[in-house]
Image 1 (cartoon, rainbow, N blue to C red):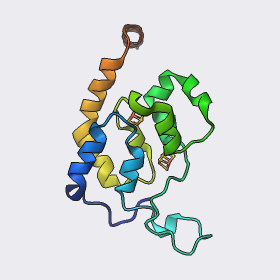
Image 2 (cartoon, rainbow, N blue to C red):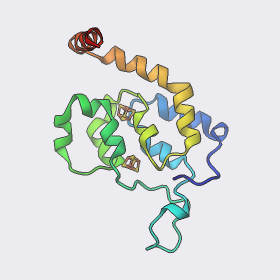
Image 3 (cartoon, rainbow, N blue to C red):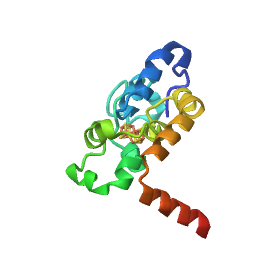
Image 4 (cartoon, protein in one colour):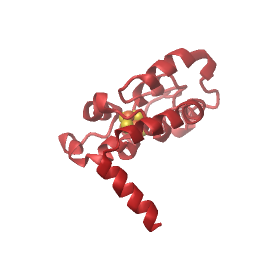
Length: 146
Ligand code: SF4
Ligand code: SF4
């Protein structure tokens, strides 16, 4: 869990907007803008890890990425489950959906709320734009069957 004192989005809004509007996986940069892990949520094998912002390799960002869900063969390029791997596997094909930011345990809730409130609708519109006609047809059939 992030530290109780989290990043005030007003202080990083400009850089955050730039990160979210860039067609690259945003989770690593959003992690670095965050306050970091709280001490009570870290292993005790290192004396002081409070504020630790590193990737813990949980793979959440990889699991929720729509690019990798649509094209699972990309995942065969590496077994790593880190933000570095996500950047290598997705790169500029990023849909800018924001899912990876929301799923990351190292990103502050303040930043997640900003993504949900300010960028999610735009991100979803971008995702729809990229959908192929076949995917749209599949989606329509799914809705019709519901
Ligand atoms: S497509 Fe979405 S989940 Fe995948 S890297 Fe881009 S913003 Fe993150
Ligand atoms: S979701 Fe997990 S693997 Fe991805 S950047 Fe955050 S800590 Fe790293």
